Image (tube, rainbow, N blue to C red; front, top):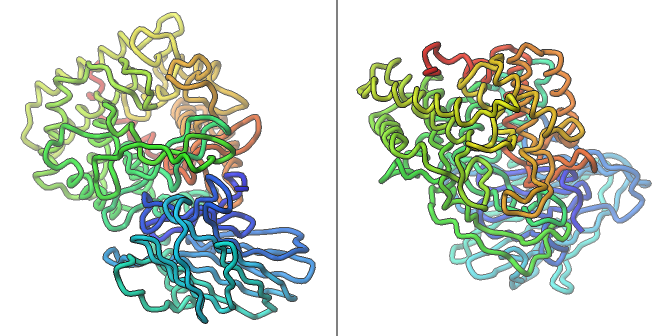
Length: 606
């Protein structure tokens, strides 16, 4: 049975990632990419759906774990009656053109003598396919269709009931390296890896990358861990950033809000880039810009909200009915039907991040500018149409206030770029369009009776996405309308101190009621409080939120403030983005919220 979501650690090689349980079991691994089929899928089912466990046989007193420095090298230390030993899990970095993927597990004796049992259950296609396994003196080889795996083992492996098992012991000072390498089955097996050398090279690469980070005290550790996690969710060959490493971890245990997040959402990726740029990284912004140009090539105005890792447009959604789901949460989904949705806000996110990246020194070419012009041309004719909104509801489109605001952001940023860098553009027409959208939002998206902006034109429902209005420079946080909005959200959408996206108990979003608190929304509230001058309250909420990450500093999408457990896909890029940005905003007074809320004095169009 899988553990709690917060019981897992994350390792990866910038192509894919694995979840390692506190108990020493790797319960999730997709090979060779984030969006490939899983060969370990026990996270969403049982042991028989694939896992790799290395754990003490008994006498366990306690388990401690940590990441080695600023890396994705995970060290799990088992303290037993007979001694102490550590399992070090990591995935060596590899060149983009290399097709093979390796996962290393090194068992080291610290004191005394510890006996371990190993249970390797390879199941391809999300637990559906049992491979043909051949044991040999060095470990085993396994093949199933296009997938081939070589496992190297310093101890003999035995096959029984389609499991490969071993029992072994390590004493103080002893080290036993295990390795699993995936490669395409039609190719020769890659050469054996020196695990000790690979471990050192992996450590050095991550430390070098993290050394460039800007991480403000007193929260530098939390910032660096989130930045490393965001980098770990990056697909190195193309520069795409996945929203999370998993699919179908539920927003409510036993519920149906289970989605596949192993794709590149434009929104989530742009949010991640803000965090990376403000923290000292611009190379990622350049790589993502190149990914974007390829993804939208042909018809830039026809933006999808998400793409595959290489920019694929077709992401058909289907259910894996042989998997019982995490804590019986079904269906287990692969693909995401929301890729067909129309969401106005992504136009604003793309325009904003391109503007911010150029401010940070990322050069534009003519294609980059022509794409932005095409975005504004599209919005000129379509900004007032219904869309599916930031929350991707499946109950039909609406005139969502946040969507209109982000349409305004798109026009504003492209207009500001034209003015600042003297680019060819119909400035007067764009200024008029910006003013028109701003006036529409202030008139139609504001409820005078509640003194608050509302979810959609003509609605009375509150929505935490409206906390983003000051963060994108639409209105100052001190504007009475925003003060009223923040107060209304604090009054109606907070449960045990954390912010819900909206009230989900009325079924208005087309799904059964119930979900956790969406963590990015609580970080947005921190940003608003700081911008309103309520530094003490902002700091108090931030420190409350910093108690939610697990012992490794990792966050899922949501948190159940009643049961006090993490929910949703894991680790979640957007949650870590919120953490990084909120810390910069509260600690330095010059974080993304401060910079973007100031804008240019003329930008509101009011």
